[in-house]
Length: 273
Image 1 (cartoon, rainbow, N blue to C red):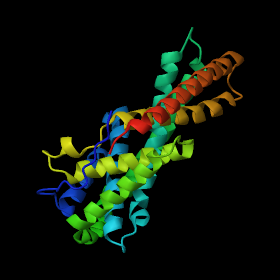
Image 2 (image 1 turned 90 degrees about the vertical axis):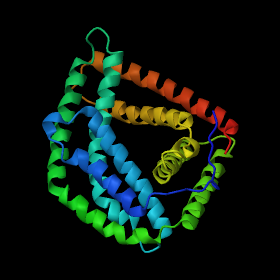
Image 3 (image 1 turned 90 degrees about the horizontal axis):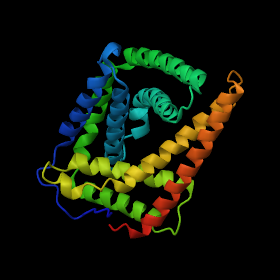
Image 4 (image 1 turned 180 degrees about the vertical axis):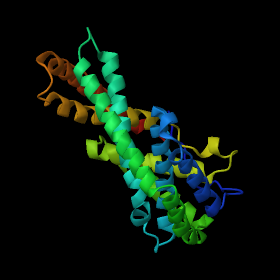
């Protein structure tokens, strides 16, 4: 499983900054105007994915234009991203609970998760109605003037800088939890931008292979699930049997997280740039 990044490969017929930002706007807006009645659980995931891609591109814009403030311009998206994230975490937790549910146990806990999800969804759609999609168009208009400062030379330097940062992390004999989180974020940012900047014919050549990112994602999911389980275990409304079952699931998740953590650290020395 290799990670191949060819920094010196030219981006022939590269999309313009305006084309890229408009594409991101269209992708995000597709979900923000979608009625709640037909909004699926996967839509929350896809919306977050599109926002991540936009944030990665704005990271490049900020590098190319020193006057551009990514955090300030991305702030409204953070609110939507976090709200959708809460819902997505509850959905994934419910799926995990369903897989491990035995003899009808965790029924009360499952109902509580469903109730939490419903409340978070209501908050999400209120926020969407308040901020978007008109606000989205205004934000994009503010970003567009800075796109003229993007050029091939700056893109190359940006990618090289990201590459060096990732190599530095991966050169360590063993990553700790904080470093593993950093590696996951940096790989995803670089991967999103290489896909965005490449033409259709170049995507296969320039995209970082997904294997390592997938493992890091599964490890991160365990981290998030454990946070939720710890809160659930402290829920005084649950009966003894449900708390015991949550503790069993917590133990199994800790074990899975460790296996993934060790596997990632084991394969890192084999990764080649």
